[in-house]
Amino acid sequence: MKKLYILYDSECELCRRCRVWLGQQPAFVPLVFVPFQSAEAACRFPALKELHPEEEIVVIDDRGAVWQGGAAWVMCLWALREYREWSLRLGQPVLLGAARRLCTVIASNRHKISTWLREASSGEELERKLALIPDQPPCAPGGYCRPR
Amino acid sequence: MNYVVGTYILYLVISVALTVWVARTLHKNGRLFLVDAFHGNEPLADSINHLLVVGFYLVNIGYVSLALKYGDKAADLQQLFEALSTKVGAVLLILGVMHFFNLYVFSKMRKRALLHGAPPPVPPQAYTPVVE
Image 1: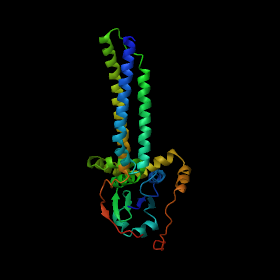
Image 2: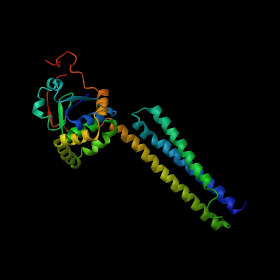
Image 3: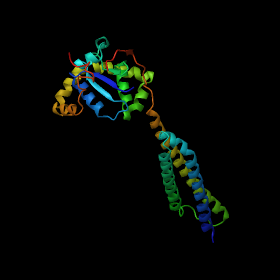
Image 4: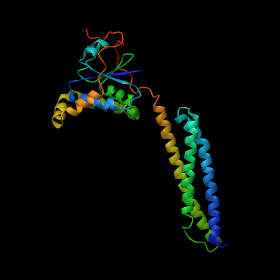
């Protein structure tokens, strides 16, 4: 596995914070963050709509393997140097079921949580951190993914 | 030379000999573990192994020297053996604890090294075309 694409909701404060945190961690597998609403996501993954990325986080590797929700989070942790041990623990059936349920609950309430987060702090800090780890430029070499 | 000095001499000889034996055993058998933990980087493993043994000697011989004067003072041969066995027993326990601590450190290092090549813990749920 050479890359792990993380398709997140760029309109949700909680998701953007998670993205900043993930981006700051040392990783075994490079993580590429793509907002699922972006043109880049649509042309890189032509069948993305069928996966319903607006419901829960979607993680796709460079060969097209898809994980979603709790499993996607386990894969994110697996990609990180400091958390791979945890991902192996969470990957066991009993804990994975719990992780899936927890992620579903958080994902379906993420806009509510984002409202609380926005009330608790100003967005400047987050914007600054987001600028440090930019999204992929919306164009792959060869130009296929240039917005058309 | 009275019984107390006799206890001390025997204590030092037995304790230091035991320390050397345990250190050599660790050095010899821990090497494989360390080579594995450092992805087959033998020079690094040998260096760490050597440093660990130095630390092991320092802690153990330090403890043996510090503990020399503590304990009952022997007045006859029976008391000499009692005092000696208490002191050597304490050294053995310390050696045992150190030994398991070393094992723990080694296995921790090895585990971390194995993580590097661990496969994904959950199988993919679907496949989707990717445009590279």
